[in-house]
Amino acid sequence: MSDKEHLEQEEIFSQVLRAGRRTYFFDVRATKAEDYYLTVTESKKFTHEDGSFHYKKHKIYLYKEDFAEFNEMLKTATDYILNEKGEEVISERHQKDFKKPSELSGETSSTESFTDLNFEDI
Image 1 (cartoon, rainbow, N blue to C red):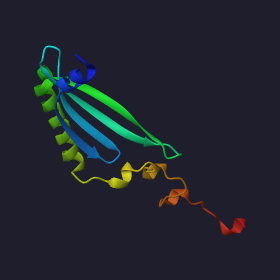
Image 2 (tube, rainbow, N blue to C red):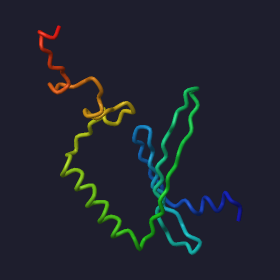
Image 3 (spheres, helix red, strand yellow):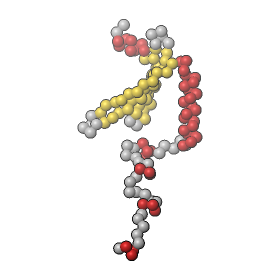
Image 4 (spheres, rainbow, N blue to C red):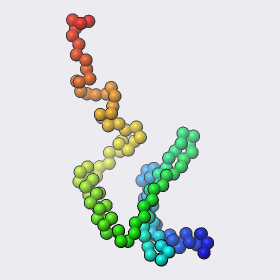
């Protein structure tokens, strides 16, 4: 069997989720024993200063015996996030140059940053 035939046999079902610079691939594949498993791949695009780019990929393999527990934990974790932080996405926090208020230098509304001057000292 050629590599191409093996690849075509292995790819059973696929879905793609595009999310900004990231793309998620959900692929159902076949084992040598012709059982199915899921791969979830995150592909993230990085652009260089010269305009060229490359992708970094991270992949997890998920087998049927882990589906129920995985789904339960995923639901628990996503429900926790939505319950704690709501569904609103705070888009500026996704920017590379985002800084927490505590990280901003010289920009504060607190009176602690002011110097107490006595006019008699001038």
